[in-house]
Length: 210
Ligand code: 5GP
Image (cartoon, rainbow, N blue to C red; front, side):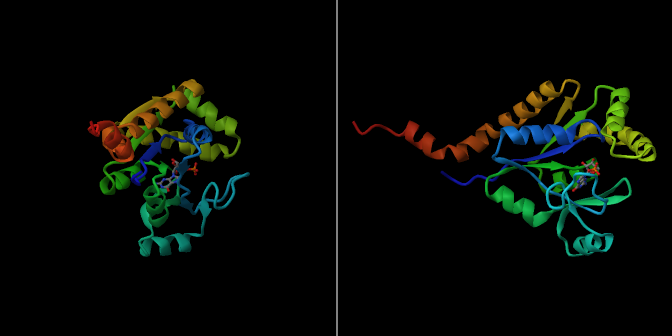
């Protein structure tokens, strides 16, 4: 079977919309998909592991990586730097593995410019009230940080129209079903199946000998 490049899915949302939980739940159902592990200068939250949730680096280290052209995209979000490693992502896609980028709208724009086939998915909360409740119930951030994130949420959501798909995460299982549907539809697009299923198509269309 021909090796086909993996699909690239960009998933953005305001903090607290449930983006990371949705991606993790989808990956738990599909062992053949991966989420890209970004570099960040922000401090780890309780329970976050270096190399698993993020590659946690110092600001100097991050800036050196920018200068070396290591990032396919990078942005400053909430006063910290975040970036996607170019070589790791390209290597994973070349292996035919579908990859999710959990990044903000600034990074999404940069990816779209370079990889126009990337599929953009934006996750919305059902209301601002619910968003605030979710941020508070995480218990991971101080009141100041939550207030800052709420004010940024509307800025992030104002870019929802730059994406290909919108999912409202009111009921988690429904939102997960919608995310999964988008991913599975993309996998079955004719252009991709013509590459992936070339041998099958050849067999099915072969003229019989007699
Ligand atoms: P958090 O600090 O809550 O993990 O992430 C804050 C925001 O940064 C989220 O919107 C997340 O999607 C975004 N983010 C995480 N990694 C990257 C990245 O590599 N690039 C960009 N542009 N944004 C990122």
